[in-house]
Length: 319
Image 1 (cartoon, rainbow, N blue to C red):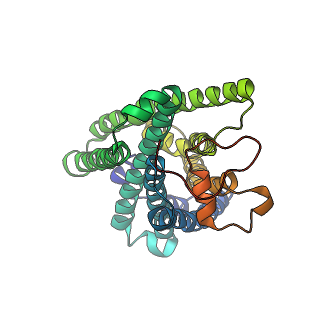
Image 2 (cartoon, rainbow, N blue to C red; image 1 turned 135 degrees about the horizontal axis):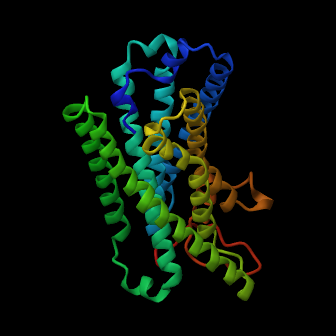
Image 3 (cartoon, one colour; image 1 turned 90 degrees about the vertical axis):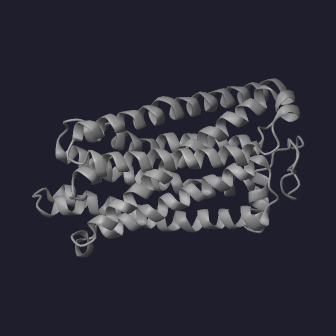
């Protein structure tokens, strides 16, 4: 995670002295695709933020999805900015700006992971213990949890930056210890909890489908799809930051991995708006409905009437 603190070279600067033309082509192709995906994903997440802010009636899970869209939007904007700063014309003169943008991208990544973990855990509780969840859940639980997770992500990344940049700048061993603690929290706590919650939801959905022959609620499909996309697309970038960077691997292997993981993480952070559209739209009217109606249907928490589509009036407040 602290590669920008321990080295002033970014990938483009490193490649400028490399004789491996094929690797340079891979870097340019992956960076171009990541830039294009980031711009498109930022537009999609901006639309989700706008609709969830002013257009769709809010429920507890809409609050979570709003915060997740903000985190993904921030991550994609930082990704696009970082790739722009790595172009040959800017790489030498904006190293400090590149460092700051990378720090903010770490913050957005941590916030996105923790928010998705909270979403999966709360939905798992609502499915396993529906009566307790409906009657005993604190009214403003979603808002409080989101605020705490944003604060935790900011605190962790700020402390990591200060420790490595100001106090232990020339001691990579100490920075490794800080990264190990950060990586343990992310890879050893958030990711396993999110995975277990997702598997539990999937098993419960499959059991309900087999026993009662009901279609799963759209919100469950959205959450499961978001978890799967994150684990496949965004987790490799976290593995590089917290694990692979410190391993004595060949430079070419590290560069190839970081290029591909950037692209996959950009795709992952851009995927949620697409998931909302695919899950919330009706096949017969996919292009005729407004985005507000589609998003409201995708995030609704009421069960769908069997054998017909749910009315597209947006989610209800109650749980």
